[in-house]
Picture 1: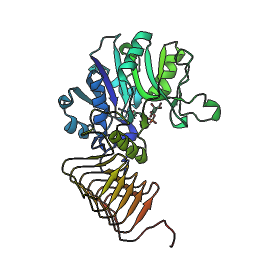
Picture 2 (picture 1 turned 120 degrees about the vertical axis):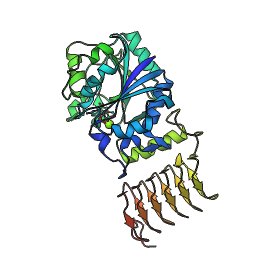
Picture 3 (picture 1 turned 30 degrees about the horizontal axis):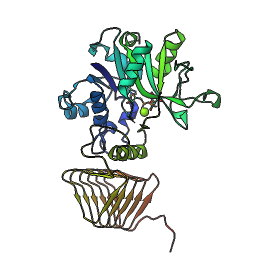
Picture 4 (picture 1 turned 135 degrees about the horizontal axis):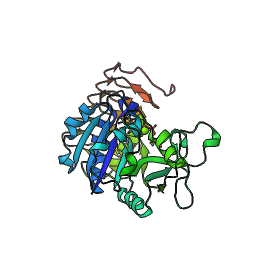
Length: 360
Ligand code: GDD
Ligand code: MG
């Protein structure tokens, strides 16, 4: 059995991604709070003890996940008084770990959706004898990530967090936000002050000659940093492209949860999820979108790649494309909202107020 640390603090967590009242890790993806997928995947890989390191919002995680027993896990929560950064957060929970000094401890960023073979990462770590092993993925534009060049054996040669100049972009391999640390390495992180694992711990370990091993693969990987990515991730979970044992139903073109009402001639495609208590009216078409609990989609609405927050209402014939509608907002009939528009929670948009199409 293995244990893990889940990082769910810091600034990112606080940002309400979808002008919604729900904090990011608890926004439903494929019908359940996003974190459920990470927890269930870890469990399926044989992890039985997880410490959630939070700097904020422990009060929303604990009432929902409790002691973790529903997921077959033993879950603990540690809340930082002030955010300690990624490395500081890891060090801060060290006393909760049960592993011996040479045993592997998994660490996950809390905002990643991935098909990572967790066991394979642990195996790589154990056979290589590395101090730290990192999951790496390739992306087109690596600038928003930690760059991790490796040699021909996969040994990490440098760690460059968020490169600033073109010369620093030496690879398209990035830190995918999942690590295995040898337990004793965690104890070398300074305690009681903010530490960035990316800017401080990894570069210092490399400078001191420590052995960091990369495992690069091409499995599903998505950073859920933006609402658009979140909508994509939810749809990919429903479609089965992003594997998770926590999807509440069979994977396919759509997921309609118990207590949702969908008109017979409504068309749901592309991994659309309709959550409990939500209603989709006659002739509506919803593609690649998430309709959250209690939301109402009126007849004839056409919704693509969008997120409709809990209790929001989308008027008849309204078109949404790449839109995010906050909790309880009301978008009247015959509107057209596109390309990243975000409607505040509770806002009211009268019938026929906005359109993009030309006069014809
Ligand atoms: N407990 C705690 N305390 N957690 C934190 C803190 C903190 O002070 N700061 C950040 N975290 C958590 C975040 O909640 C997130 O789950 C994870 O640590 C990474 O922090 P982000 O703020 O999301 O970092 P990022 O997305 O800019 O970059 C990180 O992820 C990339 C992959 O998505 C880095 O690890 C990059 O190197 C990596 O490529
Ligand atoms: Mg992030």
